[in-house]
Image (cartoon, rainbow, N blue to C red):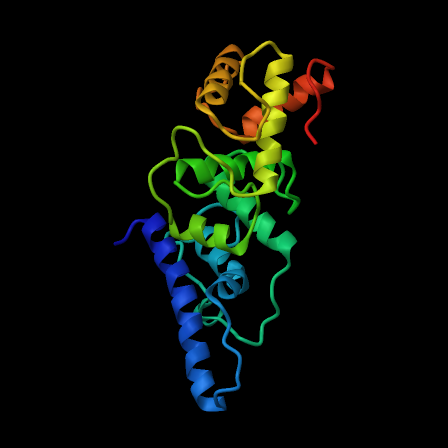
Length: 233
C-alpha cells in the first residue's frame, strides 16, 4: 500500500499527464487546428479532483475513508478540455491550503495574496530551491503538489520578481527600525539580512530560520500596528 502523500502526488501527476493525453487524442480526432491545453492549465482545471484525493468530504486529509483515493472522480482528474479555466483567486486559495498542510503559515485561506501569504510562498520557495517570486501561480501550485524543487537556497539570494523584492525591502526597513542590522534595504536577501531575521526570530520566540516567512510578516505587522515599525506595503 502506497503512503498517502505518495498516492496523492501520483494522482496529481496522473491529472497532468492524463489531461495532456486526452488533448492529444482529441487533437488527432478533430484535426490539427484543435487547441491543446498546457500542463499549467490542466493543473488549474484539476484542483477539485486533487482536493477530493486529499480531503474527501471532511476537510481533513483522507476524508471519511481509510484511503484518500476512495470515491475519487477519475474522470475529473483526467481533465476535460471544455472546462473553464479556474480563476486566479481559486489558484491562490488552493496554494494557501497546500502551504498550510505543509506547515507554512499563510494566514486566512481567502484567495487573496496578502503579505503573509507572500511570505509563506517565499519560505516554501527558499526551502525547496525555487526562485523567489512571492506570487501565487499555476506553476507554483504544480510544484507544491508534485513536490518539485531542489536543495534550499542559501547565501545571497536575488529575488525573481518585484513583488518578492518589495517584501524583502519592507522586512529590511522594519528590522532596521527595531534596532537590528539587516544591511541596506535593497530588496535582496543577503546573509546580513538573514542574520538580522534570526536575531529577531530568537528575540520574539519564533523558530530561527533566517528567511522571509508568514510568521515573520505577521509579527512585524503586529509591531507595526503598535507603532514600533513601518507597516508593510
